[in-house]
Image 1 (tube, rainbow, N blue to C red):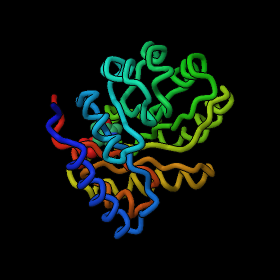
Image 2: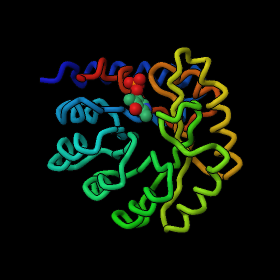
Image 3: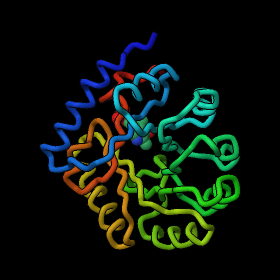
Image 4: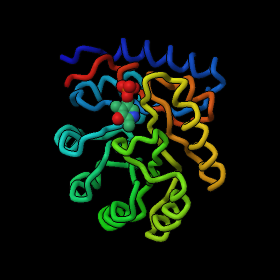
Length: 215
Ligand SMILES: *Cc1c(COP(=O)(O)O)cnc(C)c1O
């Protein structure tokens, strides 16, 4: 048994949608981040009305989803090594963490024409991944030239205080606009209000929907 059932997730989802509406972000897409949780929780999430999930770890994603049956829309949101792409192809719908050409090249080879997002370093902390903001335009072009469908940009703030992420979110949104892209994936359980205020189109929410992670 999962610790959280569909009814509880549904309740939290309804509250989250209301909160988004009150923030002026009624159209913001919610990605339910199911990392560390099992397949049963993913089923509960779908039953509760979650259409899109986010996963971070390649091995865990494969183990959880390869025999799942009809899947939700799967976004890969974790740092990704090139040698993990092959196993994930066929499970992942949106590769959100493309931050270097060699990763794009591998995705183009294993999942031709796939939907991708370019991860931009908006935290100034290299450990969180992402290409430098100034290099984003060039990477978008290069990845497009590989035949991939670049739908937007993604960023992780994850600073001590939500307000500290505001400048980074603003930067990401301005890059999305300059490059004429559709999607701006930013905001997590702890900083989604600020991210939505700065123009997020897609938030990635784990603990806020599913409770604490399992490891
Ligand atoms: C884990 C994770 C999330 C979700 O974080 P919560 O704080 O649980 O909402 C969102 N984005 C990324 C990139 C993550 O790794």
